[in-house]
Length: 317
Image (cartoon, rainbow, N blue to C red; front, side, top):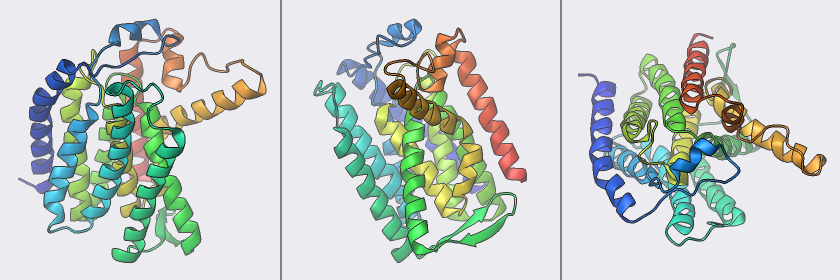
């Protein structure tokens, strides 16, 4: 059995096993989702659904990658992004859901935490593992060497932007986990083609974990991942994109995440410029589609299909 299949099966199995242990405990502790009143009415029935299920994702990925990192040291980089971002998300979730602090982690503290993790990742990337400042340009398929300053700023943008984009995409049952699984499948296939063992491990473990989590997160979801899971998965995508030298490909493979993020930015700007008017019925864009009458399950399926098509296009360009 090849390494990617083995990792996928192991991470899937461990995730499902851990899910059967953690999900009931979250429910027993009454750590439930609080649904916005101004959102789709169909979401009101989700009130009380256990969240912070991202703990399952965080534990499984950190554990398996940690074991592999003893031999494949570059995986430490991925662990920094996944565990670091996940911890920031966990603190935010914990304050909101356990301590019942509606504000959670303040925006300034949250940004500071993400910046610190980003800084650690970039320092390790450049100074410890010495992976260089070159990136592959789509269509040209040739490496482009960036200056140190440009690369640092660009890498920080990729890490922070990807983590927040996945966080915004996590709004419907199974949406974020499914999209991430498809994106990580793309990077795994690329790693297999390039015989990049470290990235094969990172990609296949990520895919297996997401698929295992979907057992509990598909509609109707029995658990939500919360910021703990979405920020961790965003860190995983950013890490594998940078380590494969393919961060520019995120503009293609993570198209639906980008659309959701842009819709939020546009909504905020439009709201301020028009003094209270909204361009979309609700942002991110997947909620606008819901309020326009499209079923949640159909939106999720469409976003998965679009992501798969984008990944196929990215692979062949």
